[in-house]
Length: 111
Image (cartoon, rainbow, N blue to C red; front, side):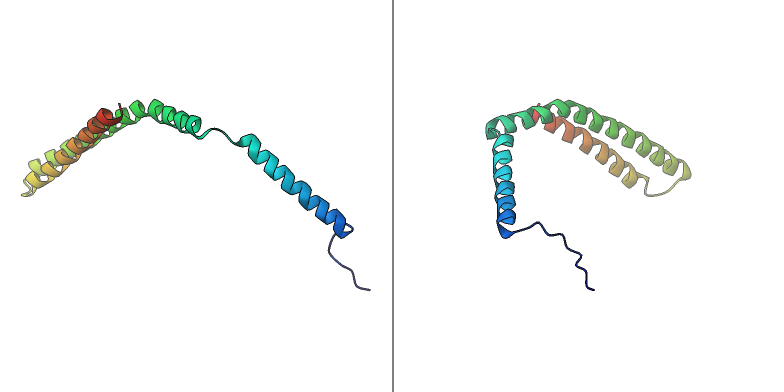
């Protein structure tokens, strides 16, 4: 005795009706969730602008932490008498200045 492991939903008419009903529900729900494009863009712009000042403050904080770490590393190299202390100091100082300048430029563009 052979058994089938499939579920039968009846006739082809029933399957066609279910397919049309599914398609109608999908099309109907698409119309319900649609919104005006301009209002969506304006809402996204307002959300990004609300987080912007926090992001700038975070960049300043990261710049301060990088500056402190760089100062400690340069101080250790200077005390141990290593010859490449000037290059390391310039690299750390440049990275701190870069973070501050980026935050300032972003504020002037989007602030």
